[in-house]
Amino acid sequence: KGQTLSSYTKKTLGSGNLRAAVVKPDNEDLLEWLAANTVDFFNEITLLYGLVSEDAPLIYTQPGKGFPPGFEYRWADSGRGIKTPKRCTSPEYVEYVVTWVEDQINNECVFPIDETQTFPRDFKTSVKNIFKRLFRVFAILYHAHFKSIERLGAAAHLNTCFKHFMFFVYEFNLVSDKDLKALKGPTERLRLQIKSRSNQ
Image (tube, rainbow, N blue to C red):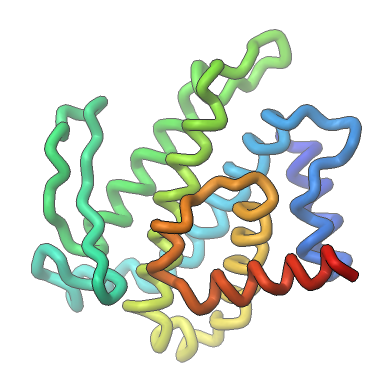
């Protein structure tokens, strides 16, 4: 099922209309739609971060470094015994995020793969936690690695992925305004784009 939805999204994206690509098709289940897109966004972001992942640990070696100005993301994961948020570098933080999201996606109790299984009651909360952390990876990419991304000729791809991601976030209210402040200018511009199109 997830494969079908994923290919639907890619087909819609091919039309160049990112706004339409995030809208749930009428005949689809909301949780299935959230699940399929969560996996797709995770794959896109890990590919993008992969472009700078080798250099990042050489540049940002001190805890608290490599984050957006005024922000320092700390890591906590009670499932792995890290109850108190700990300081880390931005490359360490991204590594924690990637491992954690992968664990969530591969956990059939959270992301069921069989049509006979049902989604857990708190599935949307799990998706919101994933999107909050994926947004932080985008914030790190823009603030700490954008020049490298530009040099690699991948800036347009990053921008398109981010725009698609944010349209999805706004469509389903997945990341809080407080978290979005790390990329306040771009997120506000995209919000206004959505509003102006809705009013047309």
